[in-house]
Amino acid sequence: MATTGGLAGLVLTGGGARAAYQVGVLSAIREIRGPRPGNPFPVIIGTSAGGINAAALAVYSADFNAAVRKMAHIWRHFHVEQVYRVDAAALLGSGLRWGSALFTGWAMRQTPRSLLDNAPLRQLLEQTLDFSAIERAVAAGYIHAVSVTASGYTSGESLSFFQAAAGVTPWRRAQRLGVRAAIGVEHLLASSAIPFVFPAVKINREYFGDGSMRQLAPISPAIHLGADRILVVGSGRLAEEGRQRAESYPSPAQIAGHAMSSIFLDGLAVDLERMQRINATLGAFTAEQRAAAGLALRPIETLVIAPSKRLDAIAGHHRESLPPLLRAILRGIGAMRREGSTLLSYLLFEPGYTRALMDLGYADTMARRAEVEQFLRI
Image (cartoon, rainbow, N blue to C red; front, side, top):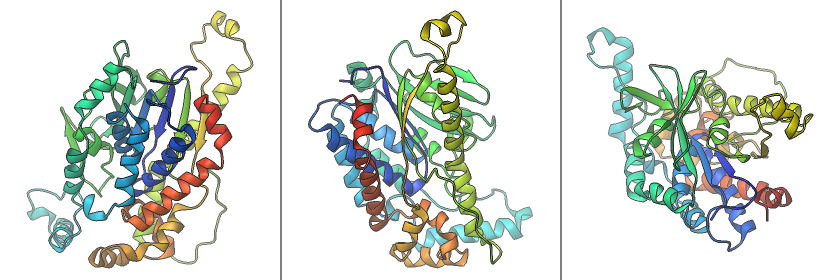
C-alpha cells in the first residue's frame, strides 16, 4: 500500500496543457520505483488541470504503475478537439456572441459564458474515469485522501473538495476551506475552468472557476489532509527571470498570458517560500521544546520539481500544429508571436507539445533521481 515513513503527499498545480509536464515527472517516478505494488502517494492534491491528473491517480491508485501508463497514453495522444470545440460553428459563434455583448449588450438577455466550449473535456472525463473507484480506493487503503480545489465566484473563497478516510476533518482558514465531498466530473471541470476561457460550474449553491485563482496556499491542503512530506510538481520555472526591455505595446495574448502566469505560478512560489521560513524556524527547536511552547506546527519535508526550460518557448515551436481556424483567431490577438506564446502554452493540447513537456518532466526528474529515491524512502 503506502510507503513507510509518514504520509507522502503529491501536489499537482494548474496550468492547462502545461500539466503534461506532470505526467512526465510521474513516468520517471514510475521507473525509479520499479515494479513495487500499490501507490507511493497516500495524499494526492490537484488544482485546475493538475486536479484532473490527481483524480486519475486516485481512480487508478490500486496500481500506480498502470495509472501512470494510462495517463501517459492519453497525454501523448492529446488533441485540442478532446478538450474544447474548435469547429467553425463553435469558434465563430463564440466570437459573434462576445462581439454582440460588447456592442449591443443592452439588447441581450444573457451574456456569453466563455470563449471556448469544453464539452469534449466533460465527455472525455466521463468516459475514462470511474469516480466511484475513489471511495473504494480509500476503503482499501490505497489512498488516504484526494483533494481538488476550485474558486467560488460569489464568496471569493478557495474551496478544497476532499474525499478521505474517516477521521479527516474539514478546515477553515482565511479565504480558504476544506469541504468533504464525493469528487466527480463537476469538481474537475470547476477546478479547471480558466477565467473567460472555460465556463464556470455550479456546485451546490455557488458557481466555481479555476482553483488557482486566489489560492493563497496551494500546498496547505496536503498538510491539512495529513501529509508530512510533500512532492510538489510545478507548471512553470520558479527561478527569477531577468528584466527585459519592452519595444512595443503588449498584445492581448501577452497580457492574457501574464494574467494566467500570475494565477498559476505566483501562489506556489510564495507558499514554498513561506514553508521554507517555517521549517527553518521550527528547526531551531527540538520536538520537546515545540510541544512545551504549544507550537502546533510541524516541519514538512518538501521536494519541488519544476520545468528547467521555458514552456512558452517550447509552445512556440509547436504553434503550427493547432487547427487552421484556431490559429487564425490566436494570430489576431498576438498569440502566434513569440511574446504571446505564454497564452499558447496553456491552450496547446497537441501531441507534439504535450510529448515535449512529458519528455522534459521525465528528464528533469531523472536528473534528480537520488533526491526522489530519498523522498520515496527507496
